[in-house]
Every structure is written in C-alpha cells, then in structure tokens.
Image 1 (cartoon, rainbow, N blue to C red):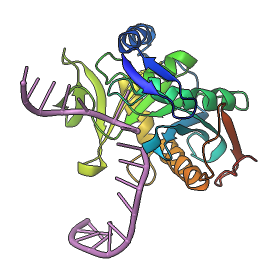
Image 2 (image 1 turned 135 degrees about the horizontal axis):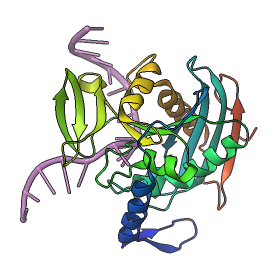
Image 3 (image 1 turned 90 degrees about the vertical axis):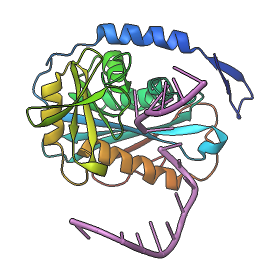
Image 4 (image 1 turned 30 degrees about the vertical axis):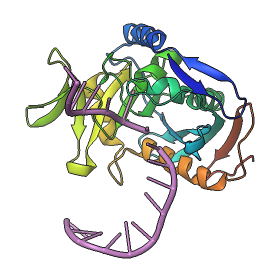
Length: 251
DNA sequence: GCGACAG
DNA sequence: ATCTTGTCGC
C-alpha cells in the first residue's frame, strides 16, 4: 500500500499495488496483438507534464490529433487535473490516466480517432500491460507505445535489426535510432509488432520521436509555461484548441 | 541482498 | 517527469 497525500484536499489516500497488478493482468489478457484496424486517417498523440511536481499536485494531459500520413495538426484537447498516484515503475498508467483519459475522451467527441500513440511502453512491460496497452484496451482503440528508455526485457539483434525480447525470447519491442536518439516501439492494442514499427517509422519527421509524441510533448510543455497562476482546484479543467498553433488556455 | 527501474 | 546556462559536437 503506497500512502499518498493530497496537499490540496488534505486527504490521505492509498494506492493498492496488488490491485493495480490484478488490473494489469486483466488489461494484458484483453490486449489484441494482431492488426485489427481499418485505414488510418487520424492519429492521436498523448503526453503529460507536471508543473510544480515538488508539491505533488496536478498534471497537464494532452491529446493532439494529426492527419495521417501528412502529420498536420487537426485538433487538440488538454486536461488539467489533480494527480494523486505516485510514479512507480511498471504502474505509470495509473498515474497518468487521470489526465489522459479526460483529454482523450473529450477529443473523441470531436474527431474520429484511428490510432493512438502513447508516451511510454505497450507490451514491453513486466506484465505486458504498459500505458499504451492500458489506454488501448480501455478505449478499445489501436495503440502503440513509444518510450525513450527501456523498462523491461533484453536486447537481441535479429536480421540486422535490434529488438527487445521477453523472458521467453519473444520480441516485444523494436529499437529505433542510435545512442541518445534511441527509442523503443512496442504494440499497445490491436496492432502487431511489425506493423507498429512500420507505422512509427512512417511518422518520423524531425528529432528522434514520431510526430504525435513530439507535438504532444511540445504542447504540454508550452501550456505548463503559461499556467503559473496556481492550482486549478478540485475538478478537471479543459483546454480546447485547434489549427496548427499553440492552444490558448481557457479559450 | 543487489541491480533495474517508462514518465 | 522536473530544476537549469552554457556549451561540446554533428
């Protein structure tokens, strides 16, 4: 039991790790690792940032929709909400879903989402239930995880390509880029590993990250700079934006 | 016990 | 993830 203190409400909550594990077991059991999607026209990038994280407070979750394969920004929703779950390796989803779910749910009411690219791992996870798989199964949408660091598995070279394999030597992620530009691509839900790698490669433009994650990361950090007027309170606040520019807060 | 450990 | 200036390298 991880004790969590909410500095705003003063409430002591507890995060039950063993229950989270059970939830992940369910998530993994329901994950589909085959290509089950129609033509991809719209891809959504998901990311979260934490202003004033020292005081354990709130997070900004961004869901930005891009046209595929042009990668033009179509729409964007950001959610600002209190995040009370601590970061525990392997349980990232339980911390970030608090802001990602509201943002994604709201975006889905405005646009038809074909694929979700999440900042973190998919099945390249100790229980095969990383945040990308978590989001994919909960929303029952094709999803792929793109992470900057390895969480689980071992490196293995196959046919001149680098992969991450699980304890049974099964490939669970593709490794793209060299040195500090290395990224880990793993299937989340309704997409195979081979297709995940192919799709992410097709979304690389500038920098080491694919456009959905790069754009979502930029927006989330731009918003953070503009929100210095204190905590938002109890409920979730939404930030709506569209067009290929940085969103206006509360517009 | 020791090392590893997404964001 | 976040706090941060200048700076080494392609």
